[in-house]
Image 1 (tube, helix red, strand yellow):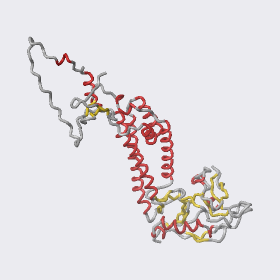
Image 2: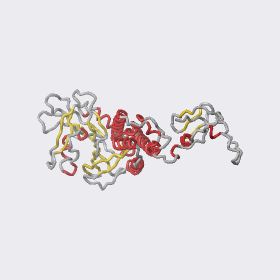
Image 3: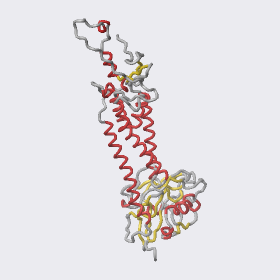
Image 4: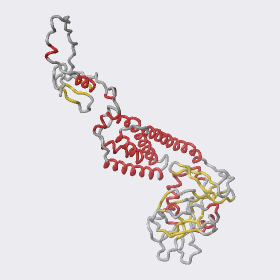
Length: 426
């Protein structure tokens, strides 16, 4: 085997860690792999090659070899040929594949963390809205995560198949493939690296995530802009009929949608289309009534001042509510004194009266979000601390609803009701 030494000083050549070039220990001159191959293919010079030619042959004057300037150690040497430019180069020759092996452990960790992170984002997206601060945080996290995936697919992944990969550690790459690409792209990218085939999966991932980013921003912005005017209206149409939906006020930055339960003498009886919060009925469970409850105080203080402007609030009629017990039960407890409320929750009687047809039969499921507070005391024989909760409607059976008795300190959905004046100037 022929030892290859520096052409200039004869020093020993040492291979760089990148495996892209060798460097002379003595003078620092760099040799690309292509140069090393040509040097190895050149046979060593023997004495016969240097002996003088016979006198009978024409004498050819020896040419002076070209002078190779000594490298200046203070200046970096940039005259190296990239590995990918060598004749016969293929993707399989990329430096990453010399030590590539998928890390199963880091792949699993990446997949688990991706699942947890996406679950947190999904929960946050379903429990927050713009322009609430938590809504902005969730939206920002979604965009950052999607942008990270886009950058990885476009700018990082393709370098694994070139002579200068941005990441060289197999464990880190295995983790990022699953954390950013999820199960599908994680398996596909690890498989591509093992087979040393780039494919087009990164391009597909980049296109999909770009569409997700545009759609996420677009939907939130358009929804916010389009519905902003509805939340600021001061009066609503006086042509409302039972079953209509009207927007009035806003809570946490979004217009509140109200179902019209009935229209009487230029006034409309409204109940929120969806629950606006998950709250306890009271902060203790000792003989709770609507008059003294936490929920009544919150609705007529915190809620109305954050949901309505002064002009909107002036159009909400103060109602004298009779808080009777459930007349259909022999075990019913007293409902407490009558109250004057701007906003309130329905009683058991009102619920039966308004929800007695398929026109407004909603929330028939038994999950927690379908159970919303009524202001009627519960019928539990064992305790007078319980409050009735609407739990559903018997389909196609007018007047029959499901109710349960719930501990007042246990959070349930809140669907406020109010009576709105349709002719504010009267």
